[in-house]
Amino acid sequence: MSRTADSDLAHLFHPYTNLVKHPETGPLVITRGQGVRVYDEAGKDYIEGLAGLWCTALGWGEERLVEAAARQMRELPFYHLFSSRTHPPAVQLAEMLAAQVPIDDARVLFACSGSESNDTAIKLIWYRNNALGRPDKKKIIARERAYHGVTVATASLTGLVNNQRSFDVPIDRIFHTGCPHYWRYGEKGESEEQFATRRAEELEKLILAEGPDTVAAFFAEPVMGAGGVIVPPATYFAKIQAVLKKYDVLLVADEVITGFGRTGNMFGCDTFGIRPDMMTVAKGLSSGYLPISALIVSGEVFGPIAEEAGRIGVFGHGFTYGGHPVSAAVAVETLKIYAERDILGHVAKVGPVLQRGLAALQQHPLVGEARGVGLIGAVELVADKDSRTAFDPKLAVGPRVVAKAQAHGVILRAMGDAVAFAPPLIISEAEILDMLGRFRRALDEAHGELV
Ligand code: PLP
Image 1 (cartoon, helix red, strand yellow):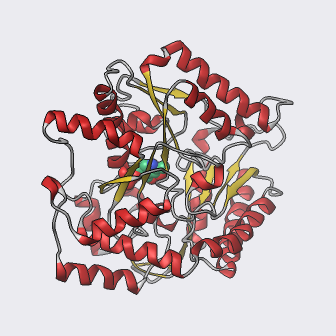
Image 2 (cartoon, protein in one colour):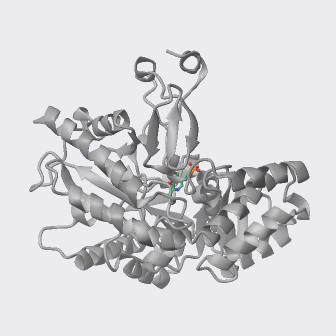
Image 3 (cartoon, rainbow, N blue to C red):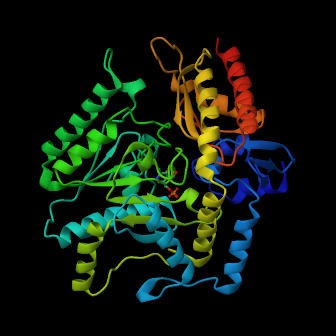
C-alpha cells in the first residue's frame, strides 16, 4: 500500500464509508483529473460517471476556473457579507442567479454546502411564520427516500435510513410522505397519472391530519438523487403544487443536484413545471471546484423576514464563509461557461444518448428498470424482472456491480441496488458509449456470479 493509503488508514475519518471494512479494502487514492476522467496514484484512469458527487459539471482541468480563483485570491481572498459589507463577486453571482431562477423578485443568501442552505431554509420558514404571527405553522414535509443533507435538521428531512439510524434524528415537526417512484410503488393497473394523483391525495391527507395551520413547507428534489434517481411521474408536480397552494404551504425546490443543466433545462423546476417559493443550489454552481451554495427566496418570502429582522435589530444568521469571494468568483465563471458553451444545448444533444443506452440495458437480465432525464439516470438491479423482486440486501448486488465497473475504469455509485449515472455535463457521445460499454461488462460479470 502507498504511503498516502497507509496514512489515510491511520488518520482519516471517512464520510459515507464502512469504517470497519475500510482498513481491509483500503482507499482509492485519486491524484488528478482531466476532462471526464480521474486518475489514481498508479496512473489508472477512470471515467467519472457521477461527476464526483454529482457536481463536477465541467469536468476536471477547466483552466478558466483555475484562473478565476487565482485572480480573486490575489485581489481579495476573503471578505464577508455580514453587517452590510459586500464584495463584487457575491453581488455579481446573486444578480446572475436572480435572473435565471423561476422565482419572482429573487433574493440570494449564500452558504457553503447544500446541507447548510437547506438547513437555512428551514430556519427561514420558521422565522417567517413567527414574523407573520403564525407560531404554530412550523411543520415541514419531505418525502421518503429524499436527500436534503446531513445537518441535524436536514438529516431529519432526508428520508433514508442510514442517515437517521443511531443519529437520534429526525427531530420533531418533520414528516415524510410517499416517494414518487411509479415503477416501484405504482399499483397493478394504476397509470402514472393515477399514481401521481394518489401521491398528491396522500400529501393532502397528511396536511389535513396534522392541521393545515401547522404545516409550513414541503421540500422536494425535482429528480430525487441519492434516493436512487427517481424521476417524478407525469402530472406529479402539478398535482402536488395544487395541494400546497390550497393550504398555504411553501414549496422548497432542492436543486442541489438538478440545478444548472443536469435535467436538460437550467433547473429541474423548468423541466417539471415547478414554481417554487424557495430554491437551494450548490454542486454545479461552481462545478464543484470550490464549496458554495445558495438559498434563493421569492420577494414574498423575503418581505416578512426582513421586517422581523428590522424589529429584532438584526437578521441573526450567517456563515463566515457564506458567499466567499473566491468561491463566488469561480461560480460566476462557471455560469459564464455554461452560457458561452451552450451547455444546455450539449445536454439536449448527448442526454438522449445516455437515456437510450440506459434503456437498452433494460434488456439485461439483472436490470429491472432504467430511468432518467437529461444527463442523470439509474438502473435498478433486481433478482426477478417480472415480479420486480429485489435482491437480498446482504448480497450487496449494487455495490458489487459498482466495484466491477471500477475495475473496468468507470466510477459509479450504488444506492442500494440502483446504480446512478450523472457524468460531467461536458461528456461526449463517444465517452458516454464507452462508459456504458464498460458498465455492461461489469453487469455481465456480476450476472455470471449470481446465477
Ligand atoms: N440536497 C441534495 C439534493 C443533495 O444531493 C445533496 C448532496 O448530495 C445535498 C442536498 C447536501 O449537500 P452537501 O453535501 O453539499 O451538504
